[in-house]
Length: 192
Image 1: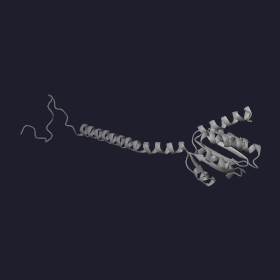
Image 2 (image 1 turned 90 degrees about the horizontal axis):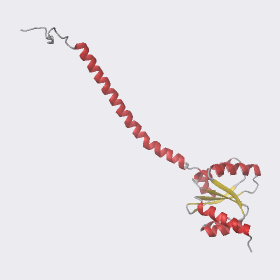
Image 3 (image 1 turned 120 degrees about the horizontal axis):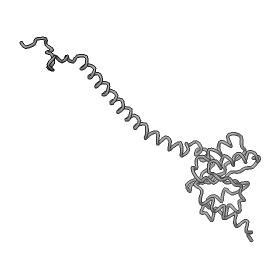
Image 4 (image 1 turned 135 degrees about the horizontal axis):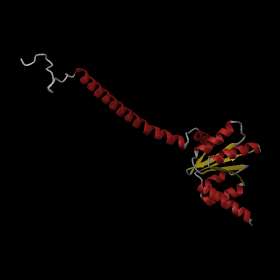
């Protein structure tokens, strides 16, 4: 007979699985507490919840949340990371942790309903994050606009320069007015 505590834990895991954009499963055998604490802090900063789970309870939650494909990977010591936002960032954090000598091993993952292998998660970690991609798109849109503005500004600057030159030329070469208000004859032949 399940205890109230176990029922509550299954409900909590079910909710976490249902709301997550990505779920990563890892074997944490041999990882010390200090390293796990640092990993958990980095994941929390990336809007990712990291929990050590009991496989039996996690299987119940996986079935209840519609993620029954994860049950095959719920063996041995298991930790789950639930990504609430960008699925790439937690994959990078887990991969970086492993690359830095962390003894964590990724078992599997679930992103957009697709089960990923450990190798696929490593490849996912190499992708740019959502923010980086949005920055590139924004830069791609802004670059032509900045170029267009620069061209218009250059044309306007050239027009002002030409108008100033014409004005100066007219001031220098303009015939001086003669007494009586009529301009002097530029040919020098007055009244022929």
